[in-house]
Length: 322
Ligand SMILES: NC(=O)c1ccc[n+]([C@@H]2O[C@H](COP(=O)([O-])OP(=O)(O)OC[C@H]3O[C@@H](n4cnc5c(N)ncnc54)[C@H](O)[C@@H]3O)[C@@H](O)[C@H]2O)c1
Image 1 (tube, rainbow, N blue to C red):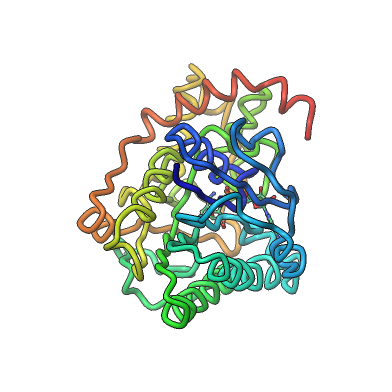
Image 2 (cartoon, protein in one colour; image 1 turned 90 degrees about the vertical axis):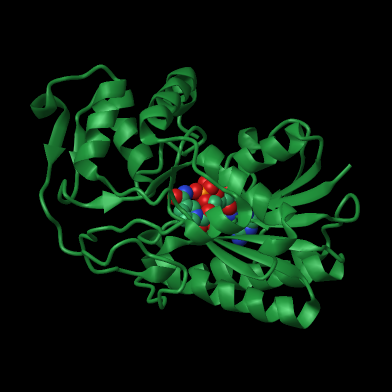
């Protein structure tokens, strides 16, 4: 039986990954401080330990249940916008915690470490730049992006120094079942869908011409599994996005379609362009496709209806708050 640690496993992507690992017969230990996640997200069959990874002493008290095959590090404060509220805390949670976990992983002789980085390391890519490949010089525009980039550099140094096989995944705009439908600061799809779920028109802050590269959570989980399993992925950094630029306008069309709504003027309120509006860019996913055989299998036309189904099924939870 293989043994794994998933940090952030009470959150959106981490819980989905933990569920897949458990379903595949793995022994899984979830580490999460529940600052943004929910205990109910941790799949049954996984072990759970509440711990703040920025606290090295608390982490030192955690013992893995068996020799570890891989550590998946997804715990983070995961919003660029929120990183401006408390930048010092962001350094602790998004960078220091990564160092602590690397050290802990090496002490427990773990072989592989897979890290959830972000497209935010690229910063505000000018419109018309085309798809962004991993070789583009990073230029983060938020503290969140800075700390993801600092974590990447620490991971590479640690990997050379301690011989830990590390893979860095730069995730684009992830959406799907499991998103926090109460968090109105992070996740364009979940924010817009939460309006419709509550019978309200979608309030769009910013222009409809902006675009994003939306990638479905099951495809992202697939990238994590391939990253841990392939010897080729050790020491590599990959974009995890579809390579498709979807405008906000096109996303709204998908969402209204999934809810069977036709009257655009009734269901979409546009506040117009705001300062700091980022035009958006798509990933160039050629590296992960070529080296790990990863391909996104969930276009928006399939992912949005699936997410709506999940929202319908979990409606009662979101009505009751946390
Ligand atoms: N969702 C996206 O679109 C997206 C895009 C790019 C990168 N990412 C990255 O992917 C990872 C997962 O994102 P998500 O959307 O599932 O976020 P999430 O907020 O749902 O999950 C993060 C989890 O980390 C936990 N956590 C936070 N600080 C912690 C700490 N100090 N110690 C232990 N646990 C802590 C939270 O309680 C939460 O359960 C994050 O690293 C995020 O930065 C996400």
